[in-house]
Length: 253
Image (cartoon, rainbow, N blue to C red; front, side, top):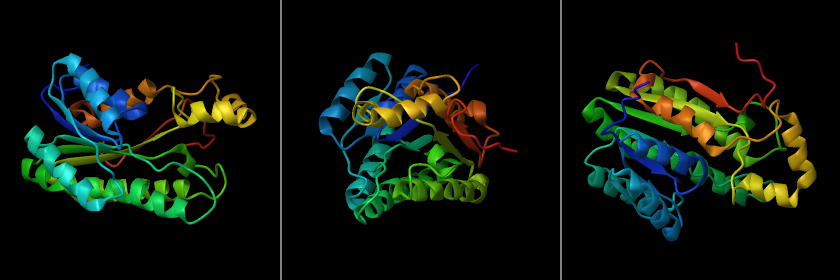
């Protein structure tokens, strides 16, 4: 299948590792020019260097989604470097946790406003071009009550509603907006890798809940995200795709 990605310009936030990096790798392999960011300068440099082997333009520099001015300036730089933007995907997240209000502040600034500011940064250019694809990242924790009352779950749930609203509002501008919600994904240095080492019983319980007997891999979600971002999914707009290997029990009618 031709995904129609050759020559596209993609902006990826939080794409130096995990699912974000897996998407960046597929896009670069398919011929996309890429601007990426993460908080760590070294991680960004490593990702840019590694992706360079695919022969497309890959640029990046660090930015903190919690710093609104710095974040917006990064997007201006990225759009200028790529001379436009066709695809935008914000992966960055503050992660989960229960306790003090800091979790709520962090989730609001990173998971919610990080996505909102990213969308607002690219919509003017996409509208002018009359084309664009945005994929927002949710989680299976918004579909079922998981892990106790957490800011992460609640704020990620708002992403699903926001994505649908954006799709309805900006369809006339040639902009598609979709949401992908991954289940537990394991990779070296990731959250579930850490949980495996520190909360073995909990980790094993989640594995038992998986019909396939394992957790997912970044590339398995990345392929679904890349499809929705591509021209091959031209009639997918306002959709919410769950990619969890059957982890959740909910039936989607």
